[in-house]
Length: 22
Image (cartoon, rainbow, N blue to C red; front, side, top):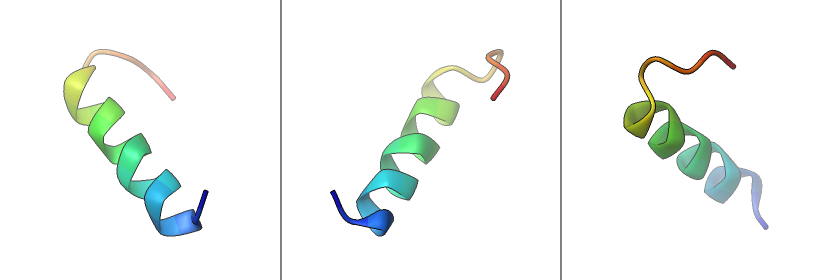
């Protein structure tokens, strides 16, 4: 997986779970 894809996926997870802490 490319770094850009990982960053995009991580961003989507943060948007979907705004209450989660990373």
